Amino acid sequence: MSNVNLITTCTNGKNSDGKAILSLARYTSGQTPSNVLVNSWCNALNESLKTSATVCAVDLYKGGHWATAKEILKSYHVDLWVVSAGLGLLHYTDQVVPYKATFAIGYDESIPLYSREYVGKSFHRTWWKELTERSPFISEHPSSIKNLMKKNKEHYYIICGSPDYINAIELDIINGLEYLIDSKKQLLIITSKVINDRLMNYLFKTNHDMAQWLKCNMLMLNVSMAKHIIREFTERGLDNLSDFSQRLSTELNELPAREVKKGIRRSSEEVELYILKILQHQPSISATQALREFRDSGNSFEEKRFRVIFKGLTGSKA
Image (cartoon, rainbow, N blue to C red):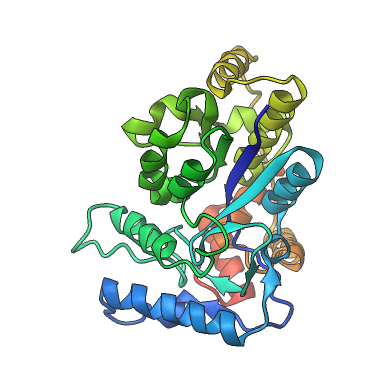
C-alpha cells in the first residue's frame, strides 16, 4: 500500500520555552490593508527564521490534539503535515519559530476577515494561498497541498481539522485533486461541518456521538477519528478510503442513541480551580476551548459566568 499523508491543523498551545514569539496581533492593529498585512507578516516570518532560535515543528505544538497526531506518526506508516495559519503547510521536521496566528475567529491573533472586501471567510483562503506561495520551506518540500498531491500522485491523504481551517485550505485541496490517480480512493477529509460542494464526496463528518464512541473530547475528535481510520486502513491493508469511510459511517449511525447525562453543577470556587489546573497544562487555551473541555468532563456552569472567571484569571478576552 502507498504512503498515507496525515494533514492536520496546528494547535493554539505551543512550547515556546522562552523563545521569542512572533504574534500576528502586532500587525493587525488599526486598519491595516490586507495586502500590507500579508507582506508585513511574511517579511517578519522570514526575518525571524533567520535571526531567532527555532524549534522542530513536531516539538512546537502541545495539547491532546497534537499528542494524538504524534502517536499516529509513531505507530503507523504515515507522513505528518501541519496546516499552520501562521507558517503555511509544514512538514513535522521543519525548523520553525514560535508564533501566534489562527483561522479561528475572535482572538487577538485571528487572521482578519476583511469583510468589506471579501465575502464570509474567503480572505482566509487568500491568506493561505499567499502563505503557500511565499513559504520559506518552498525549496525543501511541497509548500501547498496541491503540490504535495502533484508530487505524490499515488499516496493517500487524510486531512482532519476544524471547519475554520478546512475552509482556509479548501481551494488548495480542490486544485490538487486532478493530480491524484483516483481521488475518491485516495482522499478523506475529517471535520465536523459541511464543506465546499466540490469536496463533499470526500467528507467524513464527525459529531458528538462519535466522540463518546472514541472516548475523547470534542477538541480531539477529528484527529482521534483519523487515528482510528488510519489504524484500520493500514492494519487491514485496505486501498479505498471512500469505501471504508462509508462503511464506518453507516456502522456509527447505527449505534444506540447517546445517553445524555446532565452535568454536575459546580460552584464558582470549583470552576476557578478547574481553570487554574487546565491552564497549567494548556496555558494558551481559550475560554471557549476550556468551557468545552469543562462540560465534556461532565460539569455544568453558566457560560457567561465561566467566561468572567476565565478572563479574571488570564486577563484575556473572554
